[in-house]
Length: 445
Image (cartoon, rainbow, N blue to C red):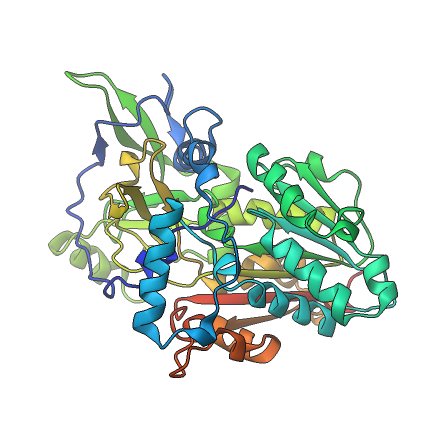
């Protein structure tokens, strides 16, 4: 997928989330009508177009705004947090970009920590093959290749294969330029311009061990939205349609759940039935007296990507990092996104995802427990469990979620990102981000 990050400086300096009460009126927007044609589309398709459409999508228009630092930040020369924030503000103003990714802000140390986690976990007797999805400017790839060249046995570096799966043509070119700063890396690195969620792009099943890296990818994968009128009403699919009136406007349409991907995601999430648990009569009375509409965002894009990866790379090891929660979410529903735009150097958030018209990032928090469940589901174990086979075969994956600070303290060199007074932005400012590690067990038949 495309490089999926945002202005971390602004996000981490927002106050904590304030609960938002939605009144249950269908969402309307007087914008984005160019994204929706004459027929309604599912919310995930609307989000995909709003972000990735080659003509009007956010990343198609803003991909050149991904920040690249000319040199690494010298953290040990900064006095503390105030000096770091001042330096960061200066960098943003000088570069006039929308965001810097963590791997860029903390280069090369962020990528080095990832490389160390791979070297400690992988079987070095097998040629190391790495895929990175949404590689941004190539900083992660270069950092990993640099680290392996300097710290792994020579044969490991000589035989390594690093493939970036990138949907943006401009970023694909930038990655080759960045990695090519070291001549020996180029023979081991290549970019494949394609959508990682398209199974056809992966070709035949690759049966050998490999690694897949996804940094800030999950948050921009399209989600679906389901809606229920009250606690007793069934869940409905949400579609987006264009209505003609005095102005063209977008509105939501609710339909009975029919989509197979939504059904699969609801199965993994184990969506509770409205009448299950407790007295159905009491629930019905409560729903009539205090009716409360419900919204739930389903990570169907993530589920689709994991299904494709497990199908194409059954022995892959996975490492992903992303936001575990987001501040100041105004949009209703569990796992609801932030819809944020940056104009004239300042960020502002929309009240509705329908307001996104190619000028706004739409990004979601990652539920890491649900991510683990989807990972197991797509590897086949969850289906076996439902069929009563789990006792025979066991889980196919060993999984672990770690806060970013814990991950970097274990695998990185946190002293390299520490200021003079002990403040460490990599450890102290990324409290709402986590790493997810998933490796295959021996139960792979």
